[in-house]
Image (cartoon, rainbow, N blue to C red):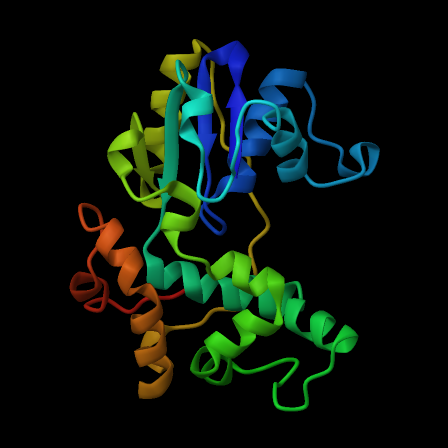
Amino acid sequence: MIAAFDSFGVAFVGVPKCMSTSVLRSFYKLEHGAAFDRAAFGGNIHRFYRQRVADRVRAIEPPDLAGLAGLWLFTIIRNPIRRLLSVYTNRVLAHRDVEKALAKAPDASLEPMPDADTFFCNLPRYRAAVPSIRHHTDPFAQFLGPDLSAYDAVFQVEQATEMQTTLSERLGQSFVLENEQRSSARVQFDDLSDAAQAQILTHTQPDFALLAPFYSSESSLRPTLRA
């Protein structure tokens, strides 16, 4: 996901489940003086900003950053394990993406509302069967490219306050991050089966390699991880 805010001299490259929607809503409100109206636009805010860069960015995934030359470029990252757990609570439980997809293209071998263990043990199959699950669980490099040094700033989701301060200083006005609705469901990594944990660790290995300056799988497993 790429958004260019030319009036501010800033561009943002986002990763699903890493506060991207909140950032876009916040910038939209600054640019237009009102909250984004999905019904009036006829699509979500990601589509709105994607259309705005269509004539300058040759590819969104992996991103063509050359089209953003001259803009201050930032992104937000998240612990890869937490991101996957959030996909389950948000996309599977709250939005019911799997259930909706399987209603259109039934697959008797897949549970439409899987518990967390079932979902993560069969993550490759759910990714193959449900486009939105594949999109939200694609590796960080798919959205950010292979080199984080291309970014002027890389914020962790835990640094939301610092990010707001930095952006406020750069924009010359207060930047307040719009809150997203969060699922009330919670999933803990420690409560998953060994097989589910192993699948998560296998899937996130490339992410931890890219995000090594910020996160490691070893340190991530010390505290209990909850979506």
